[in-house]
Image 1 (cartoon, rainbow, N blue to C red):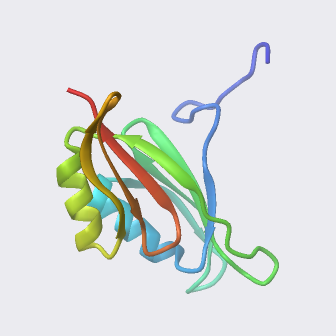
Image 2 (image 1 turned 120 degrees about the vertical axis):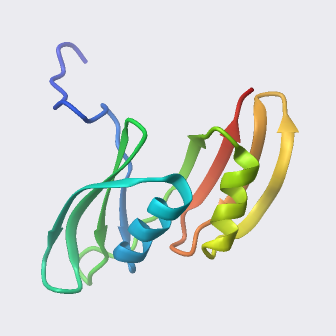
Length: 126
């Protein structure tokens, strides 16, 4: 793609998740990964029409699932400073372990399934 215009503060590819508990997911991302809410539009007092949460320099877009837009989750890979610490935080926030932290050829890595159905591969490289 030649000369693609990308708005400042966004990357060319962004995950877009549709979740039954979008508000809970935002809280999970804030507690586990230090995410910052960038934008949120509500359809009503309970349904998030569109939200954006930033982790480092990356944005994840998300919305509440509805009858028109059923849940659609993802598998995500994230680099962090300390995979062991982030793995523990994820478990403390209700994630289920898929793989305990271990040294791999590409770094220290762990896997969890968050309470919202997303898989996270958490990796640190020293």
